[in-house]
Image (cartoon, rainbow, N blue to C red; front, side, top):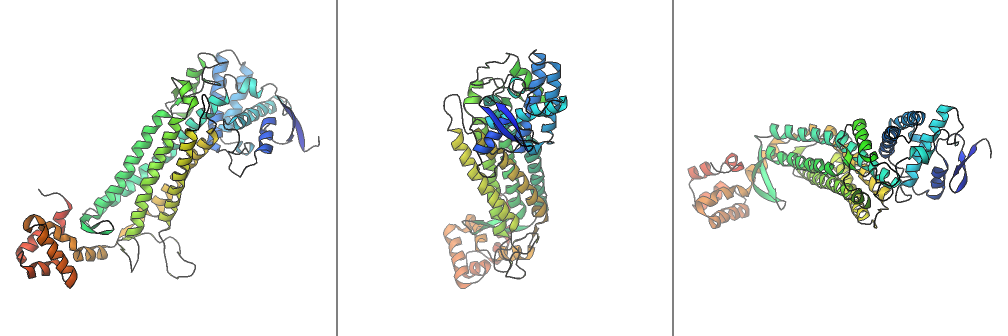
Length: 465
């Protein structure tokens, strides 16, 4: 051994570990054997695991299986990790053992070595806190790791994503109210249709997000029950009968979330349907946001040769060769994020169905994709709102011109003269490039006064009284 490494021990023997790091033998083995890409285990998941170790230490002390010194050392170390003070000590890749054991042991080893440091013992001594016997007491990776995914996902959804969705909903609501009197042409099949207000169009975007938010909120019901206390296969072997309930209660206090102990830990450990469902609701949000983004960039296309009904904020040049060009870049970024989330959801769905008997061995993938999607959607929604939605302005002149030229205003005449005659008016106006009014009068189906009374775009944006 040189001054640059130290020797750590685990059940398989000795391992050289860099002298200045806080992880131990099992972490180092994983680093050597699973150097697959740069996808590191999310910090949120590490922090959630640390909270579990903190709560477990408190409960294990009350149960008489840890002494006071061990409890305090574990709590102090775990709380520091949960606060992000040692993020650089968790280098493991997502692509490791399917249970997440390497990462669970990474947390256990760092807590053990922080405890050794605090006690004046050498790193790797496992004194006075052993990574398995004390930090992992009453736990298995099989119940702790999925519990950490539950906690990290629930925290990310409730404390980041949902508040940002509220602000995005408010931004679209403000636009809907401001645009309530702007009458424009509606479109179906990308062809002209009957009138709608721009406010009504924006209200659809708003309420799509409201509905998506509701689905995500509903999915939390399956995230709050934790499998912690089931240990290896759900039976709770080597854990007190009180451990599951008491640790869930401790975690609820630490996080402010309504966490509980899962009634049937066999179900929550053998499969991860609640996590798959939460991911599916993120997919539905992505579907919603992608549709809205496509609408916005269609309505803003131009500025001279497109629909050009909306003017999006001009934040940066859009072309390296075409001077003055500006692109709907926030819509494009959102579209890419949403497409990515759709792909991540497909992977999670496949992973969720891939469990065998009492174990699903896709846990790191599920956790990584779920937490990554929460982060992607939060960040995209924030930039979308601040850099685009709040600054959208209507092109009232273009909207008015297109409305006046629309042939589909003839639809309002059908109750008076019938579908066939109204269709004849529309075809004549289009073929001879005259107005609907001129075509109607030429055919003699209505008088000028009748046409002016009936064909009122404002009256077409709501049902008849």
